[in-house]
Length: 271
Image (tube, rainbow, N blue to C red; front, top):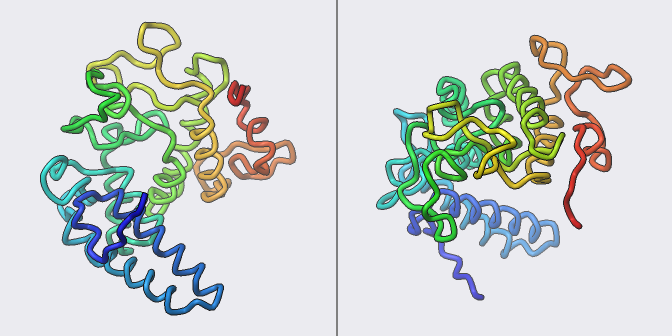
C-alpha cells in the first residue's frame, strides 16, 4: 500500500492519526540526518512541523484544556484523553497546553481516571461512532466508556507535569487494582468498568457474562512498567512507593526481563 505524504495531513481531521504522522516524520527526519541524508531529513522535518502548527487551530479546545478527537464532523465535540497525552509526550503540543492537559486530567477525577485506569474521552460522554467489530457494545464497556491501562506511560508523565505525587498514586492504584480484580489471579487487564452506576455497567469483577477485559494483557503491564521508570517515584510521593528487595525508593525499578516478576504477574500469553 502506498501512503501519500502531504504537508497538510490534518486535512484528514483526525487528531491521533495526525500525531502518528508527526511522530513518524520526526523519526524519519532524525534517521536521515544521522545517515547524512540531510535534504531528506529536512523534507520530513517540514512535514512534521506543518502538522505541529496545524494541531492547535484544528484540535485544541482552550476551555476544556484538551485536544478534540477530530477537527470537524464525527467526534469534533469529543475531547480525546489519549490523544491529548500523546501530543504532550511527542512534544507536539506546547508547554502551556501540556500544563493545562495535566491540570484537566487531575481535575476531572474519575471522569477520566478511575482506579489507575484511563477513559478515552471524559465521562459522561461517549464516542459517536464505534469500530465495526465493536458495534452494539453497550455504553460503559470497551472503548465506549471503559477505563484502560494501555496508555499509562503516556498519561501519567503528563499528570506528573503538575503533580508527581498524584501521578505516582495513580500508578500505585493501577498496580493494586489490576492485581485485585483480574479474572486470572495477578494479571493486568486490558480495560475495566468505571465507577458503579456511572457508565450503566457494574463494577469490574471476575464473574458475569461480560468479563472485564482480555486478560494477561501484556500491553498494560508494559505501559505500567514504562510509566514507573519514567516517573521514578520516590519517598517524596506521600506514601505512593513500592519498594524493591533492596529498599530502593522507586516504583517497579526492575529491568524489562523481570517485569513480570516485579509486577507479581503470571502471564498466560504467547501459547
